Amino acid sequence: MLKIGEFSKLSHLTVKALRFYEKEKLLVPASIDKWTGYRFYETSQLEQAAKIKSFRQLDLSIEEIKAILNGADVKAILAEKAESLKIQRDRIDFCLSVINHILEENQMKYQVTIKNIPSAIVYYSETTLKSYSEAMEFIPSCGEECRKLNPTLKCAEPHYEFCEYLDGEYKETNVRIRHNEAVEQFGKENDKIKFREIPAVKVLSVFHKGAYENIGEAYAFIMKYAEENGCKVCGLARECYIDGIWNKDSVDEWLTEIQLPVE
Image 1 (spheres, rainbow, N blue to C red):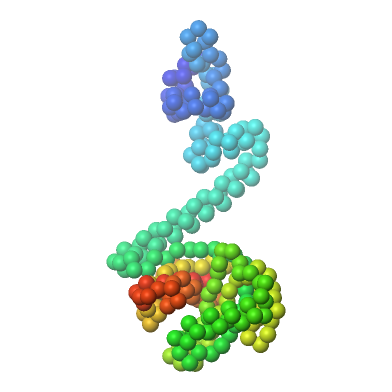
Image 2 (cartoon, rainbow, N blue to C red):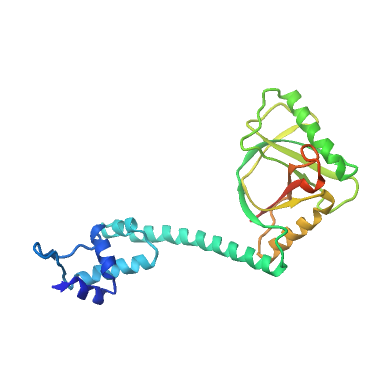
């Protein structure tokens, strides 16, 4: 029989850890002296102690270790843990890449985040604008037209509205644009208003503050980030207008989010 101190040395587990595992009924002493309270362990328990230590080093929780010791499928638990660790690794890699990108750029004007946009039903309308400035007239007109057709139709919560530019390149004039707004269900259509369901997608996101004529900087930043971090672009960039001429007096307070769908 080994006293707790001796068992601690042989198992490479601290006395504090052994008392904790006893409390959790993971590793209970073979006997406890009823007069002194001294704990005694069998040498055969060293194997169990080694298993617990190795599982803890794999970041398994106490409950997961209990399940394994009680006969649960070890491979299934380890496979689930492996998937969890992969997600953590991806998150860490993303954080490191953002930090490195900021350090290389030596500024934090734009901050990239990753978002998962759920699938949604949207009404949409497409047109060709003579110039980008006409977008601020086109977007409200889409909402008015949709409300006339579907007076009881409600916008989805949380609110999600965005524009896509369909030309695939920057153009000064004759700009093809598609405005989209998420709604609760499909509605009545006409020549201007159509409905579709957009799939869930992962996006890179940056916020641009200020005039739209300078938004090219934000696009350049997010595209460079995607390229440097191996993100495959899988759709048109989306512009979400958070603040603008309709609610801000100063152009410096205009806020636009750019979302770039990626794989």
